[in-house]
Length: 80
Image 1 (tube, helix red, strand yellow):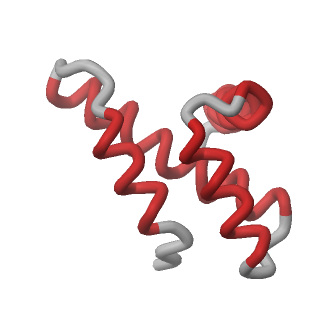
Image 2 (image 1 turned 45 degrees about the vertical axis):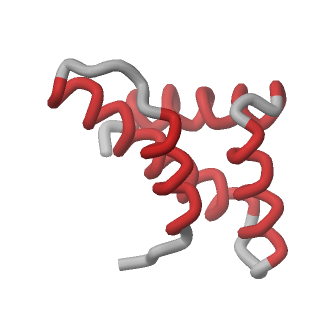
């Protein structure tokens, strides 16, 4: 991933965590940390889910789809 894009996506994840919006991001963070993943790994997993949602929005031209984003968060860590 482009380093600038990575930085921007991680900033968005940090903002979601700090604001608690959506709350599922915080719940996912707590769940993954509880599974033993580091802060950096956890934030990177969440960033991947966010990037997937952004890609779908751009690809389809449709607005943010909360349920799809939450479903992606629920599948984490889903390491490939």
